[in-house]
Image (cartoon, rainbow, N blue to C red; front, side):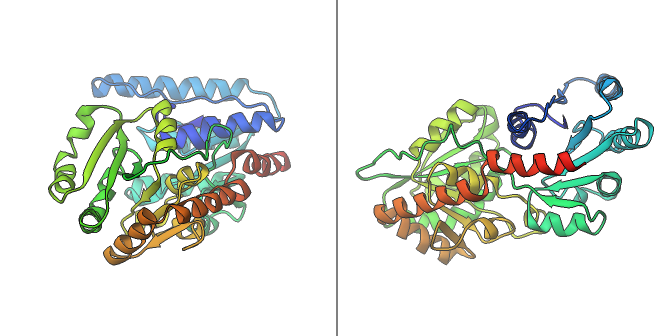
Length: 348
């Protein structure tokens, strides 16, 4: 398995390393090769990318005759065309079966990227996608397309919630690339702060310097009476944060890019038994059944009304949280979906 980033990247970590671990438990011997990002001049970066690509070609060439080449997003995050070359070389020179895994609308990132992604989809013996909109897109180019949702390993997740007598914790766990979605909640949370006591817990950057990029956004919340707590992201901190928040937040803009996103943020909360309020956009509308295992919100009024209901009703939070956990156990566990993927790969 080849991924475009190291363990710090969510897609590489979850759809790459974690899924490979579960595949190994299913009896498929798996080796993961990450791309390690390098800082420096353009010349140094290009030399590093070239060396990395050569090493992966060498690894593929030395692999056994029954080896599948599994490309998760790409073989590096810097030059997409290398992934297309690697795919072509693996299939037509090495005569390997090639599988391409995609979980974002990378084809929307310009004509060159679209050409590369569409080529990878066409060349592959099977295409694995993370959601229904991606499935519809990929099927236009390759009928051997399968949905494997971005899934979680359930064992580390705890459904225990810390009880707060007064202050409910609204949590947003994401990345620096998703923090700007919180702008959708400025007005709803400002109204909510007038009537309810809560704290907005944000974990979306690994350092104070990264959080500083969004200080103007955080200040808008504070000026409207919203208590904001920033926590540095790490795998360990994320686990602790999930145990201590009472409501998950998953706002999304309603644009072409978000339509194809795979809803892992929602699944991450739900695995920990956290009721989630989410924008009714893309795959989130497939994961959440409004009013049963979470709430879907279409505008400021719905965000305010549904969050107010969750903040004020502890029993409903518990009920929705348990339903959310059950949903993940049935449809979004890495263990179950790795077995589905293992069956697809075995057929190849």
